[in-house]
Length: 385
Image 1 (cartoon, rainbow, N blue to C red):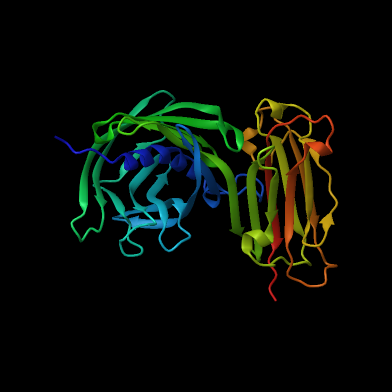
Image 2 (cartoon, one colour):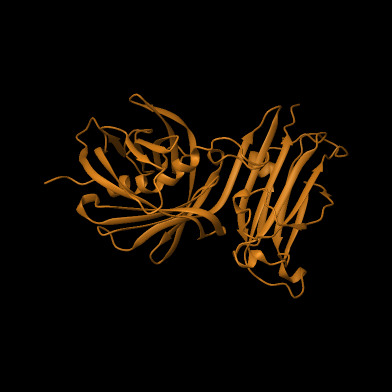
């Protein structure tokens, strides 16, 4: 009787497929304030059978050598603590394929030495999945390795893995619902398998340039369905010549009214140079795809400024998104404003810049309601005393 593959390892293989597919674009295909996918941190909210759960971060954090393979490190969870709470998976993307080389799972309540994973997944040979298969074609991928639970030197529980994973690209260009509103041009993948001899399915949606924005999965070995969807996107890039590039995106509306991107909030210090122009950009779009094709301005009050003042600006409507070039040709309208200013009159150098948007229908009599996607960018020079 064969031993089964852990459900966690099977699920991560399913959900990493589109992430690896999209990571290959590596560079910047758009303006300077549209970071590459690997430079973004996606905050996702769990979807449970009875509603929603907590949030987790997904981010690429560097490279790791496993055997003779160099792979990327993909973290899911909270790793900004002494005892992490999450998973780190080792993945590499090469042209039109993904190479998976294992991973580690950490529990914050662990009694193991600090830095030792609670679960380690290894593979006999790297798992390779082709990403250039046509829509509808099923690809069967063998997965063979081990899952070790506990201290490897202290009689751990070892599960041998000898399974297959069936992967299909269901469709391209789908519109998928997330906690950031409707997101377009998603590639939809479907995976099936039988971890621990129990049937399992997973569906994953990937938006080029952004990453995995939604996933749903179900396993016969546990009740109910699970999954997640993106709620917020953030990025901080240390650019050349002492510049910083900050990005943040989330939905505002009746339930959550305030969007704010502030250099002080991100870096925890007043580090902006008052004498060098900062570029501050705000882009708004109705979160609902159908509503986004209309010409009504979202009921949002915007502000660009510093800690003690603000810069004049005006929102204008455009059919082009600088934050989401993948939405080109879909008929959406955006309300944008760009400020290119310094604050030379402030008394002390070492200041902060901010971009904010507040959902406030009362300031727009007769305005329609509904969630609004707010995207902000600040490109500024760091002050050095």
